[in-house]
Length: 80
Image (tube, rainbow, N blue to C red; front, side):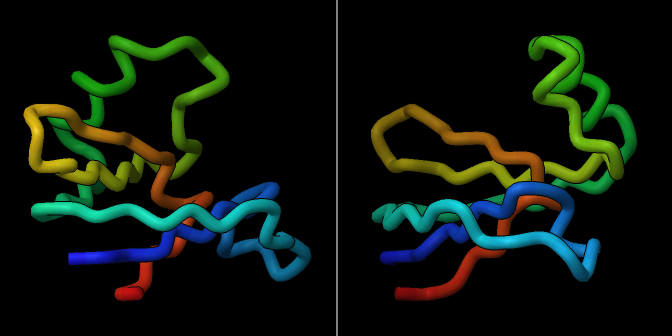
């Protein structure tokens, strides 16, 4: 499935946020993580700048054994 990920300069929930990038991916699947142990696991493997302030993460399955993880409150994903 082809998707577009729109990246924002700050949390998309902030009315003043602006789109700063758009990336197209061909993915096998995705997962949205909202808090809990999975979010803590992701946060344990990142530096402080990559922690989502709402503890939300979008994980894309790229289909080749690799994943791409985003701070979900800073991105929106749409089918391409």
